[in-house]
Image (cartoon, rainbow, N blue to C red; front, side, top):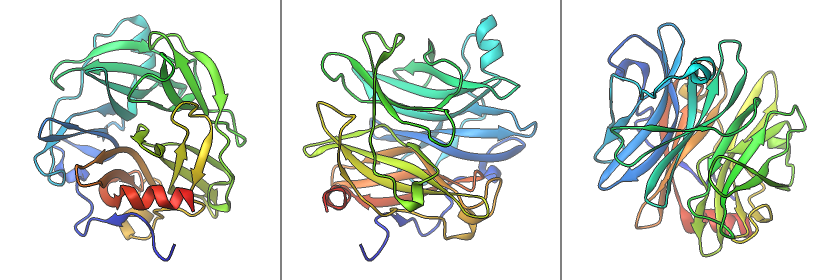
Length: 301
């Protein structure tokens, strides 16, 4: 490649703390989906207490978003009160007529696991359950069943040698049959890597945007792309060896976490353009675009 495969929107960032209608420290790492003719983002919003909640942001053009002032509210039972002190890093997946949101549920002591909620209209939301044990913060559902089972891409937080898995479930609550995803380790992702947005189905395989981390003075988060087998998605059938987006701009290099581009949400347009929504420096939300055909070709080079 002679250039990064994702191109930044010229007027980034597209959503900042100043766009939130209350005292806010940062807004970043959104899930994203097309809902009819509307674009929906579910961003991580860190308020003036630095508590993290999920909000709904809406747009008619995929660029100019209005964020709702009230967070997504779920009924709180005794377990949820403990685990949902903070909610963040959502991935949104349209699956069998329902929009599922997998998110990090974290205690005040910063122990984290994955929660799952669902909605059909982005007005009312229902908790499905807490679907992983503690110490997991990277999880995205596949948008259809595989071999008759629901599937997810996940990375338990098991240290520097963290392994990503594809796991399966009959009901979205009970998960198993985990198989490791054997991505080739490149220098730019040698410390750890994890899934970004929900996998995108193409004729060539499941296209997956992911983040990779290399430790310089501190961690540097970049984006990459891979291609998975449609029927056995733990098998990597193509991988772009180079990153497709790296922190370069001031809004990506300086913030709550320096040198960080991190995506949870991507939308494929009818013309094959891919809109990738990403958090920059754990501070604001930005947009980059790419071409689906070019991304697939880069995985197969």
